[in-house]
Image (cartoon, rainbow, N blue to C red):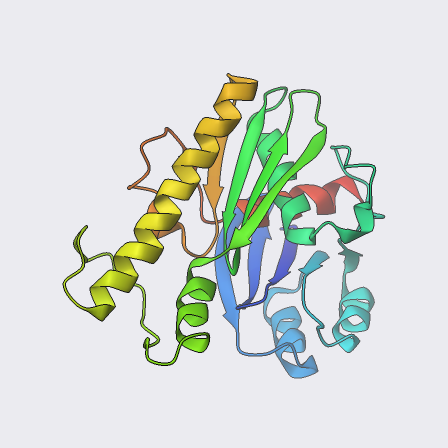
Amino acid sequence: MDITLCFDFGNTRLKCAVFSDGKFVEEILLDSDDDATIQSLIQKYAPTKSILSSVVNHNPAIENLLKQSTRFHKLDHLSKLPVTTPVGKPETIGADRLALVVAAVNIFPKKNNLVIGLGSAITYNFVNKHNEFLGGGISPGMEMRFKSLHQFTAKLPLIKADWNFPLVGFDTRTNILSGVILGITKEIDGTIDAYAEKYHNFNVLLSGGDIHYFARRLKNKIFADPYLIYKGLYAISEFNQ
């Protein structure tokens, strides 16, 4: 078996996906990025290849660990990609966004694709039918909105996400739930509508840790896959071997 470990280090969670002969097997949530954690994964799965996408200041020693045991690739602006990137400052593009658009062009080749990532931030990523990643937008994610309401006010509490809320909130908690979750839902639908006015025909792909809060609430037709970023990382790993 050809095993590949795909690491996705985001602002909220450190994760790893296991691929066997090109097929997604499982997702693993990591407690930390210390040497022992990574070494245990290497010992358990005996991978031949690995790739790291990181938007945080991760433990640099793990890169050497992965290089010693696997054919390792670190995703950055110098990686070879099946898409072109904006000419402005490609080094500032988040590795997670690159992985999402690569997944999109693999699933829907030669099509316009809007890929929406629902994580610590919400990213809108548009790649056209010529495989040109044109950019998109970034807005605060769900947890960030909950935290900001708590941190930048004197009395609003920090609450947890819950879909069981009314349109018209009846207390502070339900008011916040309605404002944040319904607000994000309408933001996503509104953004899709805005793209539709300009591009008319395109696929919408939805992914990220908060996908289950929004996928069934959107009025627009979408392709939902919580593991989209891993599939993009695997494709980039193969592309760079």
